[in-house]
Length: 414
Image 1 (cartoon, rainbow, N blue to C red):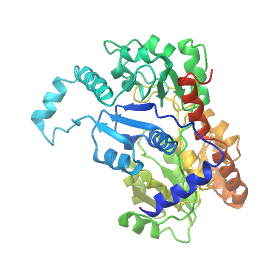
Image 2 (tube, rainbow, N blue to C red; image 1 turned 90 degrees about the horizontal axis):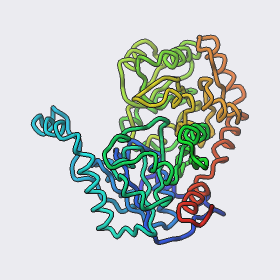
Image 3 (cartoon, rainbow, N blue to C red; image 1 turned 135 degrees about the vertical axis):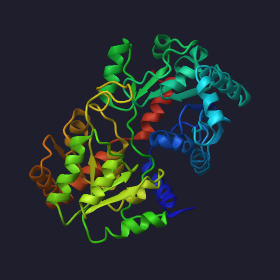
């Protein structure tokens, strides 16, 4: 077992003291249509359920070696769809065939999912099926209506309608009958109003569980460790995520820090883009860290001093333009768990979390003087901001929330 997992297990014991989920050997089947490694909050949910002693089955609709590795680490029983999405470069004939059959693929997956549920002993009268992201619910189809509120569904994005038009899936009946979970308070109210629901969806924030909480963790990846070694003795501002050319104000924030705080390191961890390449060339105090698979990315985060967060309103991937305005980022909890203050832009999803908790500074102007001044302010009052960040992190009890969701779905709490 690596050092990060050891720390996580120790911290988990401390975090769950005094809280518990009722032991119940009725099965919980998690149905997911993307790669697990792309959704850290789902990894957190699986860990919570597993540690609670629940009988958990993960049904993945996309095969991935990383997914298998994560599930093996958690110890969750799983079955993954026997086919994966291939590129044209890998196998052109097979890729063309996949394209031609893409319209029927959801229905083939539906048959496969229900066969897997039957083979693993699903009891429609007692067990819980928990789908995540819209397409997963659409693939389950109307048969899941038989579960009633024992069909739990988590929306991770506002305006996610992928699969809404699938044959054999009644969206209106689904949202009225299932136990709905949103990951942010405002999104829950928007969803309730838009769909004329009788009750507010549960709110389960995208907080990592568990979190190591210890700074300066050993780095598992040798190449990444070499990059981090150059940070020694420097204050480090870290942004976790990809940066595209259309995120102008974010790029301006990063450039303002590079210029205004020349003695600090300004780092970006994620997919490399042309913007990142340009920043590497332009600024000697800019540091790029390649994508690190969760939860090992937290090893890198633990070596930074200030976290950067930035979300901008607008329609992305067909989602609601309000999705980024009422953002629900796991990264703010990842930063806060280490006691890292956060420098971010001023939008509702960040002002009423980071701003309200005084765990960082929200900016509406990104010129060099304003951004550098905010960076210096965070450093001069670091102890206060760091303590507030820790309190913000600890204010959310994921175990208790999951407990309430399950109790409601199982009819044990109204």
